[in-house]
Image (cartoon, rainbow, N blue to C red; front, side, top):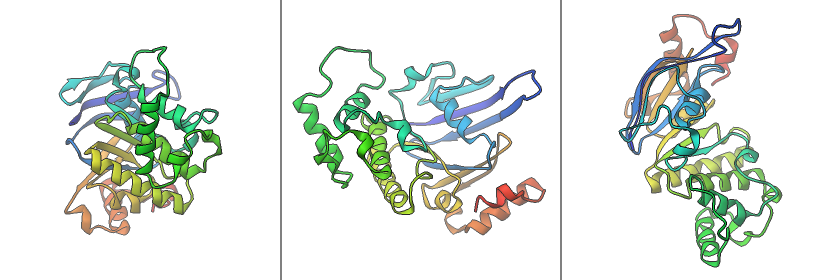
Length: 265
């Protein structure tokens, strides 16, 4: 499912002393099934980009299309059937006091009208058990366990499954491995690649890790001050090292890197 941004502008606190220009005349397309990693320093516009696509923010000007549909003014709930999203904090994507199966039942109804029908039926329980088994974490045997008792990696894996349970064609990942320990982060990255590949999902993944940005997907965008300063695709991207990427970034800016930007490596 193709995504298209055309001349997107977004400012926060307009007309005030703290006015911020988050996105500036942003124009690009993502092909259906393409996995794009997005990097840039703090304040570059990465999360704003995802929020704009998800419907959290509305652009000041410009057009956003998903699969040929102009969704620029669609509210977040109307886009819920099209878009799954995973955040950095594993706690943000799940309800800790509810069980694993109750969380999955809520995810299954995302984007649908409220209903008084039973949340977890025997048929759905078998569906959940089957879906969880593919994660290979043993969660299929913990359906009745409150999510707050899971580890961070298990909880993020559950969140990833919940975000894609309804098979949305678009997946947004906002630094979804950054809060995990190295072992769990590697596991979640593997699961992410598996789910994206199986569902042929069109994916935008924000990361601060340049190695991960080059390792995942087939295309990398670098944002700076709300604009795309680098757009790297395979096979050119496949030969780059992190040092190459840093050098390219510096050359596009024509100014020295700050300490914060150096830390991106």
